[in-house]
Figure (cartoon, rainbow, N blue to C red):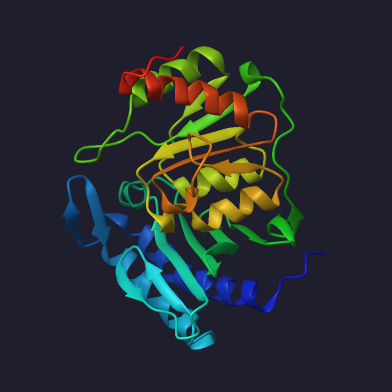
Length: 273
């Protein structure tokens, strides 16, 4: 039986509080009032209500912690050490089209390091959570990344840019290379759940560019605590920035990095296979 720490319990309570409204609004998705944030980037009243519910719960439980969400300006940490990182509705486009693949994502950063994360797939009642040194879990089941060792057997996921978003270096070339060398590539529309599924072994790898810290924070600690590797696509830097991310098991991470980096080098004019 998994034992959750006090900080994980705070995160779970906040996610469950927001989930009540999201679950109700998802059942009435056609009635939602929707405004535009930018090209093909929507925000719903459900998104904003979930954001408010999470901020209220986290701030009540840990008033000295900083907080940044996708929908709200950052609040600096009074203690100078901790910051909540929140996406109240990852997969908004899926949500607004009635596609049951979206999640709530809450990460905790301590002195610049992501140390805990919760990803709640509300529709499927799947609660992913992890804390540094305590493992990764799906509800009460311990998670482990997949054991596949051959690239040709690997199932991957990525995020394809949409209108108004930068596709990054040769995304379609990367997808073509991955399709040619692996068992397939999927595009599900939720970065948080892609990372959770890598941690659960459902996916063997995931990569994407041009994300926000709220998209990846919780998923990073999940994958690492499940025994996986998470870096930027080139293998260096901080994937927490969202500039680029590559997550996989310990065997497949390096060959995937070589495959994807080769296509980026070709686009940039530096050669590559």
